[in-house]
Image (cartoon, rainbow over all chains, first blue to last red; front, side, top):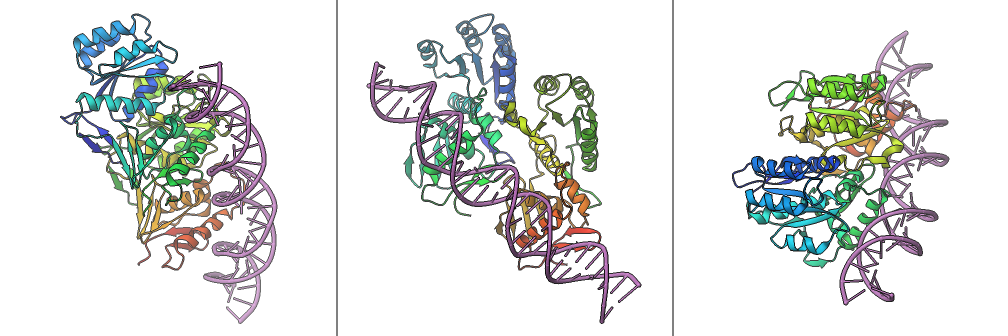
Length: 246
Length: 246
DNA sequence: TGGGTTTCTCAGGGAAATCACAGCTTGGGG
DNA sequence: CCCCAAGCTGTGATTTCCCTGAGAAACCCA
């Protein structure tokens, strides 16, 4: 089930209308806090743990609908944690956090069961999107909630990553896609460059703030090219997307 | 929940009808006093602190609905304060104050959880508007309070930054927008040039006082152009806005 | 390993916004 | 009715913000 909040954002809810519950497990406090903050903002209920034992215990009493699990924990390795989690909650979907250079094939085996993973450093937009996907597919939230965002004649499918405007397919790079998704999830709302950076770029990005301008310019070339523009600049405030007419 | 005060201003209240509580943290006394005065004028309850430890303690006993937090404190850095605040009040929204040139610095991730920031030197109108936004979105105040100001056939949307009169969209610059917002939040009330300067321009503005006249003139051109005027001059007193009829 | 793709930095150009200045208009008191 | 203070607005300088081309570096896939 989804509802639309007063801010116009679409929230994911469980069938009984209560908020989705997510357990976040990471030993770095800054990461759990960053994630907790961002996921709470999605309207979800969050519990966090800093090690494997804490995770197992929290899972038992909190009974989350999904788990975000760092593969690198101080007390036990990710696989053992996963095993124990599964003993209590056999069907809970797990989003793994792994270091960039971690052995990918081991993860590949794990995600076969419908789980997913992102590599550190991640962007919040990516984590949120993948969690939404996991929860949606697990059936914890209403299945009818679908994965296509629509603004005017522009559509974006979060599952297939397909983007169309006026029926024409548009190819976007990964970053362009995430930026557009963020804009489309907040239609008609001015988003500041800082907000966009925080959300779409990874948390350790230390570069120039004008990447946002650059990618807005890329998006315009692909989406607004020769049509009524949908992406608008609010000088001194930020950017927003809205249907071309009106 | 919102109520309309005898003066005609719209106030933000908590669901139980008690005033919103805001904690202000800054080491410069002039800043905390400036903010406290302005925020009290909004009808909110204010407590202030001059350093990180004071902030954490005050948060614990005062339990604010929102926090204004300077990133540059003498005893601990902004992120540590944030972490400790969050331990006691996981969902409290925070408005960060940062130096203009430290913007790139490390805002990353801060606005991701729905928090926001303004750069020093700020204008009071900006701080108040952003605080209202944070409180509104956090759910501490009634969610029905929405983001659109209406005076006669003139509307101003604080989220999309859209302004219309009689249905026609009107493009305003950032300063024009803030000036109009201030007028519209105080309809039918005479606002002196000094008041306007104090509210809409940043506290270190050292320019000529006639910027107010200039911007009023800009606004008239865009809003009153060829229609029944809504912006009126009270010679020797100030300006006011009111619906065109009557 | 190598070529195509993607991400990002840097820097120049240009447009918009802000503001100072000055001359002009207006309104009200005497 | 005159005059002056208060307010209005045209002009243009300055600043700030945004856009985008070019190319370097990183990445990915075969």
